[in-house]
Image (cartoon, rainbow, N blue to C red):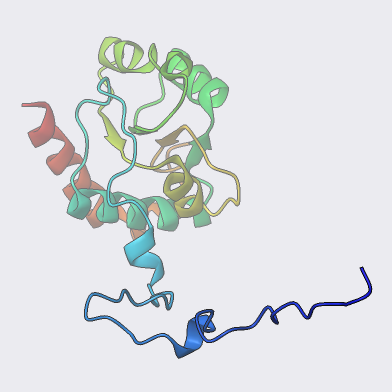
Length: 176
């Protein structure tokens, strides 16, 4: 018991640091790749199967453009309650609904109500885009464009009358 033995040190030639090991041909790059927001965002969004007729990208853009012009003159009714009220009172115009509403029961009765009142309607993919085109920060499920405002004779309709007529023709083709 009198003699003390030396223990070998923990760092030996067998235990090389990770950095000193030779790299292999199959090494994988561990740097995070720089990706843009477009690559990380999903290419498709949820759209209900009940959203028929669904506007294509070109028609959706035209719809947003007309809604933006009409909302400057307050010729737009926003929200389910307001649109249903306008339809029951007999207002004429164009109803634009979002296709990504969940639950769909919130607006599922509107296409039938529009058909009963012979008012054209169309679905667009995003309720956030619909709200933004009506100059609100809040996503909107349904919007009714009433040309001429409440009285129907507001002179502000001249700003978007031709675009609105083209939009109605395009929506009529979707229903055919």
